[in-house]
Length: 450
Ligand code: S3P
Image (tube, rainbow, N blue to C red; front, top):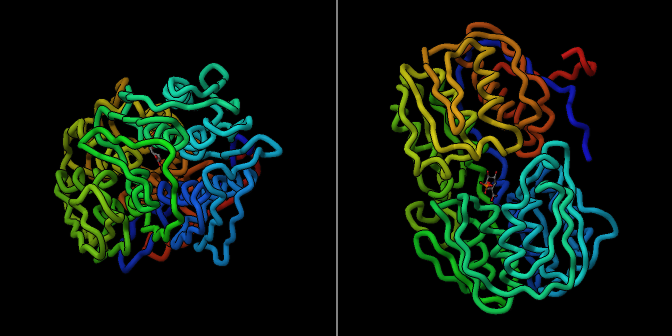
């Protein structure tokens, strides 16, 4: 398990503008899935544009520990030599998923029907996160899974014969949906998962690309167990969730900023819609795929953004799962808008890498932003500008990057504490942010001195 707290921090000078062309690293969700599906496929899978971040490298190391041969001829190019449906082998030790909830929950599905036992652990943040949401449906399929008061370590006992189920997800969670779909591949009969609202559908698209037949309606996906996956060629687009920081930066202080090669799967781009409702000037220039289609390859586009006045909005409930990872930086946009922004129905934010409602509220308070923390959301009174000060990210990568973006509209310097986990999703963030125009430097201080 990694240390609970890092000594790395950002120092940001106020103001500046962002411009030029930025290319963010590969999509985290898609990179995890490409490794896992590649691992249980027949034949080789080539992954181009792989996200070489700590989270995805945890998945890569876990698969290697399970006996999958993986080569990385380049930093962002991975070849997975598929072990086939019955080719995984018991790991010699517990699988450490680091900070990665996706790695842990999807692995629960991947390992539920294996003939051997597995144990999943993670860093201090992951060890606090709820795992029963994935364990419950997997047990209904016949898996034997033990959590500790609902949290990791997760023990998966091998040798269970899985059977298909019909399951309605109580929470809109792509991770739980994906865990069930991965387990269903090893189950007898048909599995159907119905979600309360659409969530990211990368698993469904990628399963189809690996040759799995599945049927999809608006909220239900079904597949027959026992199908063989065939290795595929996966081109990973830029991560919309990483582009989000530059998208908001561009809305606040953009002077001709282009984000190149960004994944614009409609189950991910809720933030685009929210920013547009606030009055943002964002253009989407499609490159490949159809962003309106719900099947086929992942759609990719260049995004062009220009600064302009933003106004507060009430976030429509349907957009919450489609923007779930973008709320930290969306709150910065709200704080810099004129008028009130209200988010409700977002209690899921309390069980992410940190309690993102509480941690963001604390940081906004430090910068003098008027707000009210709600049980399932937040009310933010924007005034167009922020103060400076010291903000604690509590080790949450997206919160650290969100407050870095805040500096563009701050009146005084901002320091963001405990930022090492930015490497879990966005290696090279500081360099890219500086190239675009943020006045950011990364510092390492002695533990305890802040
Ligand atoms: C993810 C799904 C989301 C998201 C997470 C990545 C995925 O979590 O917050 O960062 O790759 O499936 P939930 O499915 O728990 O909402």
